[in-house]
Image 1 (cartoon, rainbow, N blue to C red):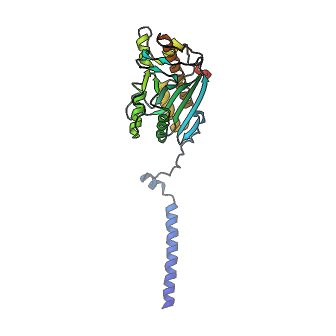
Image 2 (image 1 turned 135 degrees about the horizontal axis):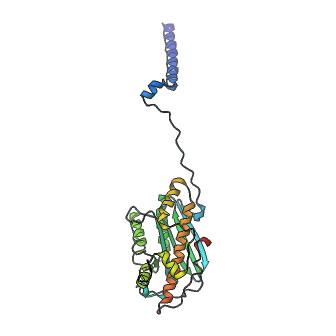
Image 3 (image 1 turned 90 degrees about the vertical axis):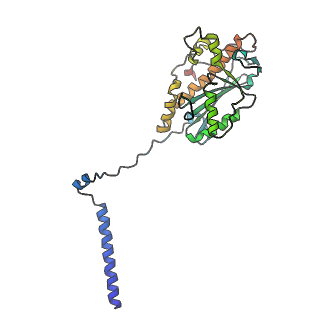
Length: 292
């Protein structure tokens, strides 16, 4: 009886091995062409690898994952002294060391919660030095670290200087702080919005009061090979999708020139104000974009 049981077990094992081999063969054998067409069978295509992103070292150094900082220092033609900003309807004497020039590059111009700043540029005077710092995020996750760094640069004594910042940059950044459940450090700061001061003085004389027009009229700045601000969102998206940083570097240059021009326009406006002192109009430090 035991011999019979052993033979049965051996036969079952052989049958199982043969069946398994047959199943493997059947699963790997190609279907007849007619049946394949009927079932719409397609060969599996290899998964496409996304383009490798180049480390954007042209954006400076990486402060945190997805957040880059570019810094630059240049000489300013004359020592900025305390000044009066009544031309911009900002009360009190202002220490130049408290002025923070601010300009953002964003994912769109419509505003709202869907728009974010992917680049924040700031600049300040330190004696006769003009210090420029630019933050760029290369991943969406880098936004929180960017906002925290901006907050670290602000104090209650900070005086913001922007061009249309009261209507655009400051509200947009305030919204981003709130979405990150952070109190906005921009609230309550004195704010020199140069657009409004320029409009009051020159809107009847110039075709428009865009920053590019003001640069030409007041500072003699001519931008060469400048990437228009309207193309900045596409440059950032192109980097995210394809890893191509070339136009993103041009956005960085555009933003840097905006900051230099803000400082030049403020210097010019202060020099024209009879109540102000210590400034002279200057354009040499601003240069041409192609020289930077």
